Image (cartoon, rainbow, N blue to C red; front, side, top):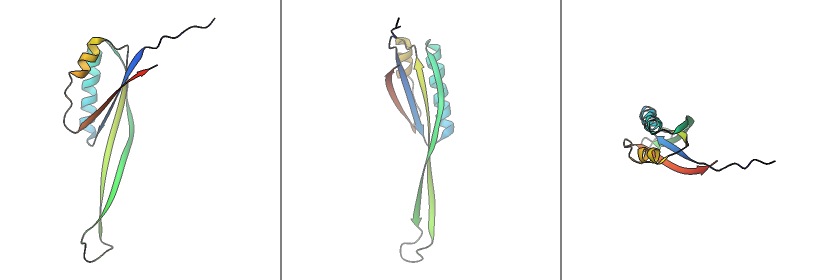
Length: 110
């Protein structure tokens, strides 16, 4: 006898930012708002840090070996919201994220 699973939609929220403190604070705000609305949360899960390194010439006309090294770090976190309700989606859409935090929201099925 096969048991048929019902596909309950879940929402995956992924945040990216250059400042990890700002990212953790906004992730905590999202978790608190969604839990207050009565949904279940799995996460936040830290993603690997993306490091982009650049070498710049200090002077374009002389001393080719003298370079300056710069690095940009992009931090990421994601969480899954399970058993989503209308109150939880309203709480999620009414949140204000600080500038510098980029959010991707996807609806997934289990």
